[in-house]
Image (cartoon, rainbow, N blue to C red; front, side, top):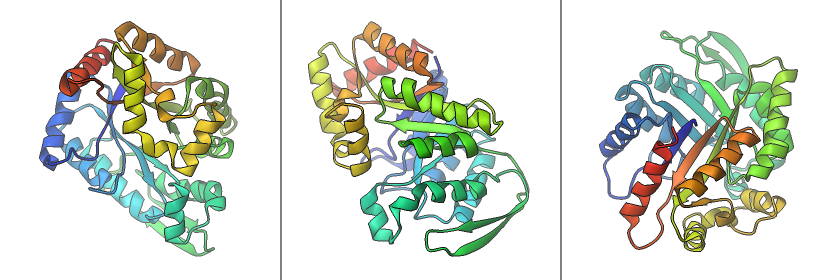
Amino acid sequence: MKIGILGKNARQGASLASLVDEVVGYEAQGFTSYWMQQASTFDALTMMGLIGYNTPKIELGIATIPTYPRHPGAMLHQASTVNVLAGGRLVLGIGPTAEPEYETLGSNYDESVRHIRDYLGIVEQSGKPDDAEFEDDDKTNAEHESDFPEPQPHKVVVSALTPEMRRAAGHVADGVVTWMVSQKTIRNHTAPEVTKAAEDADRDAPRIAVGLPVCVHDDKEQAVARANEVYDIYGELPTYRRQLDAQGVSDPGDIAVVGNESEVEAQLETFFDAGATEIVASIYPAGDDSRGSFARSIDCLRNLL
């Protein structure tokens, strides 16, 4: 199995340097990738440059960076710099953010699919000199030139929750990275729609990275309840609320992969069978012994590599 770790932007009270040590540890244990979300604290891409410079082989993914706050030219230059520091191991995940954040930027969420297609036209230019134009939601055109001294192409994946966005991801990007998406949705929608779009565009088989909460714990009910606490925000954000409703689940904990070691392995297998190319595990603890619970989940996933 190809399994990565979805880490935190930075542990509360911990230094940025300690995060580098953490990823070095995951690499030593054999995990294929380490992913980080862009939170409202430190800049995830900058941190990945530091991690990439201090690790030799683990793949480094961003899942994801909201596009509207960053001009695509600025995103391209930053991602290309990080990719050189990481020796070509960066997987840049981008996507529209939640609707409330769009409102603060004065952006039109209804235009998000066109926005992402136009945005990808620039951020995929890493590693090759190019002239590109970007038209934002205010119909303002911007020209961009790129000419990198150490060209190395990076992969670009899209946070794709709708059919239109999945088709855009397969047609223009290298694939998708999902979050709060069930095995059934991966099988019936994500994998076939993204794959068909990639085939129609004569692109390589797409990457389908599936982000999931994971907890190895003998008390499933307790583990699900804990997931509802840890990931409660995703039951409130309109984009994810619609996604959960469409999948027929009421709470984020219903998406979580929980159980003992053999049960977690069996559940992860169903995602690979459904079309996932890799699992990105957001490990969370349950029970009174948080440290021991986390370690048990890590051990389980490591044994599946």
